[in-house]
Image (tube, rainbow, N blue to C red; front, top):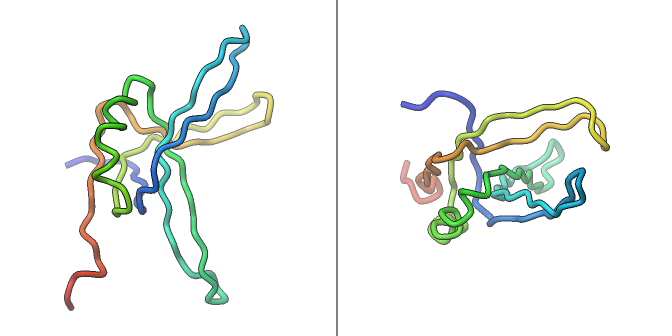
Length: 113
């Protein structure tokens, strides 16, 4: 049994964002995109979107497996990272540890009551 924090939602794909380090070299931040539809307090449909970062070493494995997660409800183990300072002030992010397993959850809409 695994313990810790998880992000649960509909797998929407992956995203890669370029950025430059202090030496001017281009680097990349890779992330999984997960969404969760819900209704707000007024009954209006809304969608919460989270990005879960993963290491460059995991990119090949993620690309190979992402097709089986597309449009499905998944559970992703995460570490929450928060840091002060930087160019844009304090920030926090979700990070998937190396060799983590993404679990496809059963579709609740197809279950009978």
